[in-house]
Length: 159
Image (cartoon, rainbow, N blue to C red):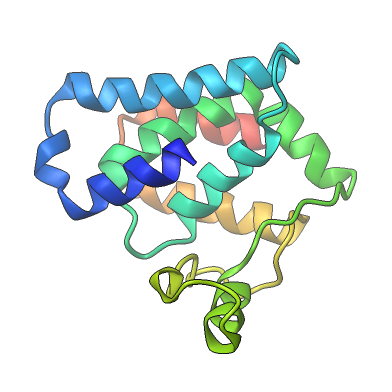
């Protein structure tokens, strides 16, 4: 929930998060969540997937702020995230289509209309969605939106 709150703040007021220290804080929060998951202190697996979805499937993502938070998740917990996908673990991650249906039938707030719209597949966690995230991250790297070392390590962790 904290992530979603801040994500909406920085997507609306990007200039307030222009300083490197503020961006570092965002990345540190995500890194801590990933470390908690790997150390089995707190099960934050769904949060890791949420970070990936909210950043790599959303056309409104602020990549210079959000990718530095996604990459540590992949670097720190990428193996566990990938293994969960490969095992076919069940997660209730919504897709763009799920949000659209929810808005149409009134089961979710209209504010989420268009959320995760870049992913047109089904919800949940599966190999097709993982491959989509990998392609999106590769495209961000080719556009030079992040320092290449961080993206390189994140992509390696996805393999």
